[in-house]
Image (cartoon, rainbow, N blue to C red):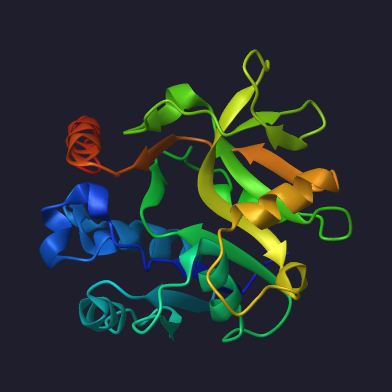
Length: 243
């Protein structure tokens, strides 16, 4: 199966990355010589995605200019200049630009490098893993020791049956949400037309025992602070192909 539609959440203010984000939207902050969002868009294109909705708010004009240069994807702008919609509201609004059906959702400031060569990519494996008839969400996750720039917070426990639950101290298999998941757009069919956090729907899926996870291959990179950016740059400089 190929999922041809995707949403990239890119409208955040990036306050913890100031002063860089005083003049740049966070997704355009360069890491390893490239804007963060380009790693995300490249991964989507490689996985067979054709249409991508991207929400914009902070330095929205810069985002639109940069995105207009991509010719390999049909990029649709979900404009949040007048009201920032938070993660859930932003996704619900952006989905209205896409046809109904399965969709990949990614954060614009979380990406990965070092996928094994000659194997399906992380997103292709996620799509193959996703079974919409029994999964509300299929989430890409990463062990804490494969997370670059992360603060160590554990998000979920990954069960032996691949079901995810909120992490509690002492859980045997803690993982971090890697910023990518697959879902059917109908899962948000009752979403309000107002800002809300996507965790509301993560918890709904958990309550239904329908939040599933699969592990990322490679190294996951998050850049939330200047310190995290330095850590990411130092790590990428050790990889010849990306240096």
